[in-house]
Length: 148
Image (tube, rainbow, N blue to C red):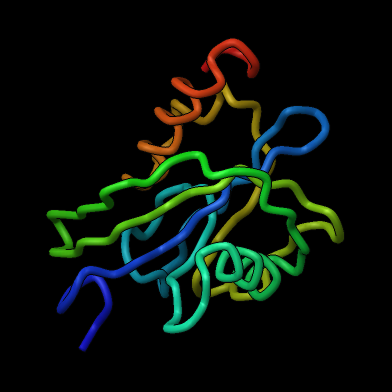
C-alpha cells in the first residue's frame, strides 16, 4: 500500500529562513513522490512512531545535510493532488539552520536548491502544499516579512 494513494499520507515541511530573510527552496526531482519539477519548501513523509518535528529535522539532515531548529508551526495544509490521485495532510513549520550549508544528498528526489527573496517565490512553479504555505506566510507574517 502506498502513502497518499491507498490511504491519506502525512507529510511535513519547513519554511527555512536565513539571517538575510531569504527562504530555502528545493526543486522536486524525477524520483520525487509527486509534483515533479515543482519548487517547494522542503519536507518529507512521517514514519510510524516519529513526531512531525522529529521528521522534518531528520528529513533536512538526510536530504540536505543540515541541522535545523524548529521554531513554530506555520500551518497545516490539505495537500490534495487531483492530477496524481494523491491526498496528504501536511503541517509546515518555520525553521532555521543551526549547522551546515544545504547541499543535495538525494539527487533523484531533488534537482536544484537555492535561497530566494520571498517576493520571488510567488512567481515560481510551486508545489500545491508550498502555494498553501506561502498563503500562510502572507496571513501570519504580513507585517514582519517583506511583501510577497
